[in-house]
Image 1 (cartoon, rainbow, N blue to C red):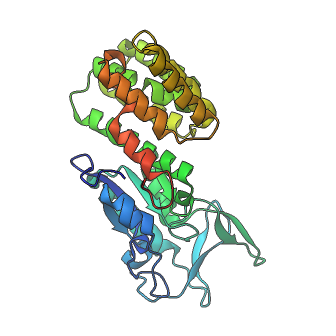
Image 2 (cartoon, one colour; image 1 turned 90 degrees about the vertical axis):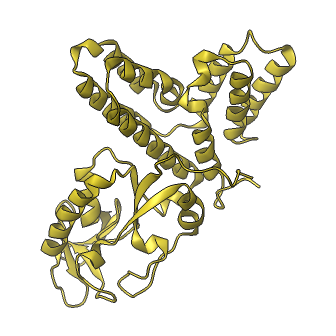
Image 3 (cartoon, rainbow, N blue to C red; image 1 turned 180 degrees about the vertical axis):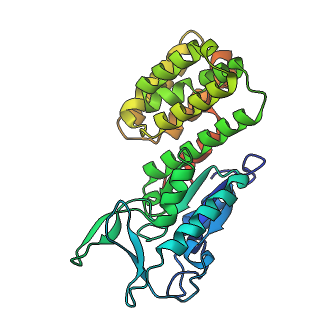
Length: 330
């Protein structure tokens, strides 16, 4: 089982979240949508910043249900029975709230799916003829994503999928590391070192973006350090939007194993290659070859691999969180 003494990085990673997902009774009917994984598992590693746009905008609990109406690109927020238009109120609240969130240094946000205020995709929108199509975005979620285009966002419904869950948490970790880079003394060398430590992680997600970021770092002299760091972060987070798969992980695992070839004895080599092959065939999860590689890197003190994010303990934690609905290995 994952060590109960493991703590989140200090200061803790801070995530925004729709308040109803934490069990707060803020929905239109006075109910909630508590998500046990978010509360009981992920909540041990992060600090939540709860937001309920509809309550905080002054709509009350309970309240008349609302829906998106009209043009999906610029929908109106309208109550279902009385047809009261509350778009302007939500827009004012959203503009103020996203500015308030700037100072909280969020590393991600988990929104309530299908919500006319919080859904980030496929929210129902009703046209003039009364037909519903699932191509809308909640008004607060739209404002948040426009204001914070690089912050990872996800809906709780998609986090039921272990692969999507791992992908989101990994993006959160990377965003946090990039923000920590910006808070320090930014130099071209610091950005280059950051890139080097993310080599295998980038290769697992998008070799094309890895090469593009490599060219950016190689031409670092053309940019002021702060501009270089910002360009790099935007490129990194764009690269990580491409999910890593078994097909992309296996070459990376084999490449790392190649660095160890001259250090391992025949038995160790066979064991490592066998573990990677088991992962390729779906017989074991990614955390198994990652853990064995990290063991050999530590045991043989391989400097070139020691600081690779792809192998670090925090990443193993998030892989464990992604393994199954309970979130932990037993």
